[in-house]
Picture 1 (tube, helix red, strand yellow):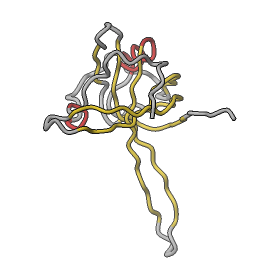
Picture 2 (cartoon, helix red, strand yellow; picture 1 turned 180 degrees about the vertical axis):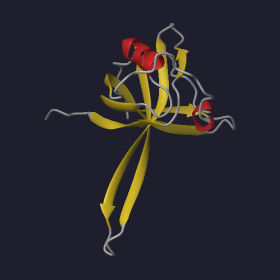
Picture 3 (cartoon, helix red, strand yellow; picture 1 turned 180 degrees about the horizontal axis):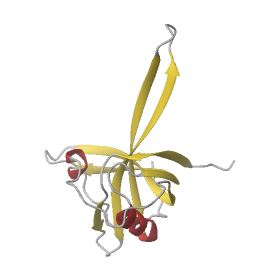
Picture 4 (cartoon, helix red, strand yellow; picture 1 turned 30 degrees about the vertical axis):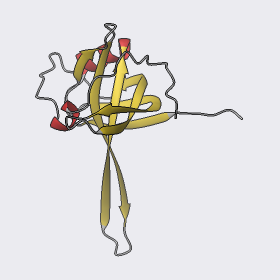
Length: 141
């Protein structure tokens, strides 16, 4: 049986891109993406649930996200889930599931001519950079 690992999301960025380079010099970008689900509850009131997703992009997709997005930008992405482990500041093992972006579409009507960078999210600061993980490398479970 074939398996499939596919994610499609449309939403707004919750942070400006945080860039870096892997140990081998490959550009990567981290950012968060918010998606929302809205429904009417049993009493007739509207409810909304917002989910936050951690995105990582490499190469050309990283360049596009770095150069043309900022906090609040609208995006449609396609990618795959990847889970990895790291040691936090207290030397405790943490697992993180992130979406490796394989295709990105900018949905804003007019991209910003000059992206103004704000400070990265504090939560993202504690996650270390991927250590030479290829964007096509499998992660064993």
